[in-house]
Amino acid sequence: MKIEIDTEARSLSVDEGGVGRHLPLYSPEAFALLSKLWVKVGWDVKYIYGFTWMGRPIIQLPEDMVRVQEAIYRVRPDVVIETGVAHGGSLIFYASLLKAMGAGRVVGVDIEIRPHNRQAIESHELAPLISLVEGSSTDPRVVERVASMVRDGERVLVILDSNHSRDHVGAELEAYAPLVTKGSYIVATDGLMQDLYDVPRGKPEWRKDNPVEAAKAFAAKHADFVIEPPPFYFDETMGSHQITHWPSAYLRRGR
Ligand SMILES: C[S@@+](CC[C@H](N)C(=O)[O-])C[C@H]1O[C@@H](n2cnc3c(N)ncnc32)[C@H](O)[C@@H]1O
Image (tube, rainbow, N blue to C red; front, side):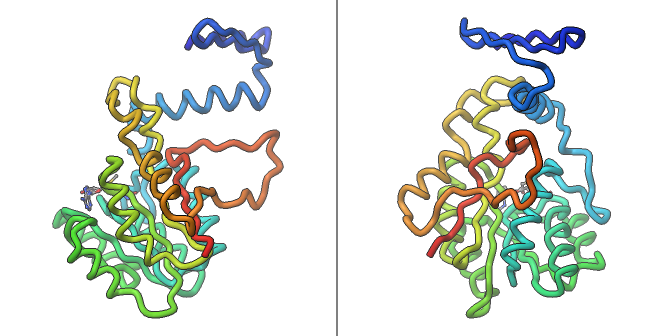
C-alpha cells in the first residue's frame, strides 16, 4: 500500500495493489485508514508497553480498556476471569472497576507468575478482590480449579490474554466458555495479530494463526455464542470505527 498525505491540500491518496483512491484528509475514511496503520506501527514500536494502572504495568491499548469497561459496567459480573496476568495491571484494572461498582472479584491465571509480580499483586490495595492461579490455562486441573472458584448463579465474564496462537485460544474458548453466563462475554484478545504478518516484529504465519480465527471457528460451532462487540453506548462520532488490538474479540453468550 502507498499513501501520500498532502496537509496543505488536505488530501490523502492511497494506492492498494494498483487501485487508487483519493480521500479528503479530514474525513472518517482517511481517519480509519490512518488509524489502522497507526495501530500496526504502534504495535511494532511497543506503544502499549508504556502504561500502568494503579501502579502496575498494563500491557493494553487504552482504547481497549475503555471498551471492556463498557462491557463490564453493563454486564456487572460477579467474577471476571482473565488468562494471562504478566505484571498484573489488567487484573488490577478489572478489580478496580468491580470495587467501584460495589461487588465482584477477579481470578487471574498465568503459566508463570514471577515472584516480584506475585508480591506486588498480593500486596496491592485491591488484593482482597484478586485470586491467582498458576499453571497453563488449558491444563484441565487449572480449568477445574478456576471453575470451582465460581459459585452457582454468579455472573461470569472471561478475558483470554495468554498465548495467542489459534489452537491455544481455541482450547481456552472450549474450556472457559461454559462458565460464561447469558448476556456476558468471553473475549479473545489481540486478534490484531492477523494484520501483523508484514510488520518487522510480526510473523507471516500470524495471518492465519491468530485469535480471530479461533473466535470464528468457535462461533461457527457454538450457536449460543456470537461475535459481537459491546454496543457503542455513546456515539456522536462521524462514523464509528474501532482503534483496537481486539478485532472480532467479543463472543457474547446469547442463551
Ligand atoms: C500479554 S501477557 C498478559 C498481559 C496482561 N493481561 C496485561 O494486560 O497486562 C501474556 C501472559 O500470558 C502468559 N501465558 C503464556 N502462555 C500461557 C498459558 N499456556 N497459560 C497461562 N498463561 C500463559 C504469559 O506468562 C504472560 O504473562
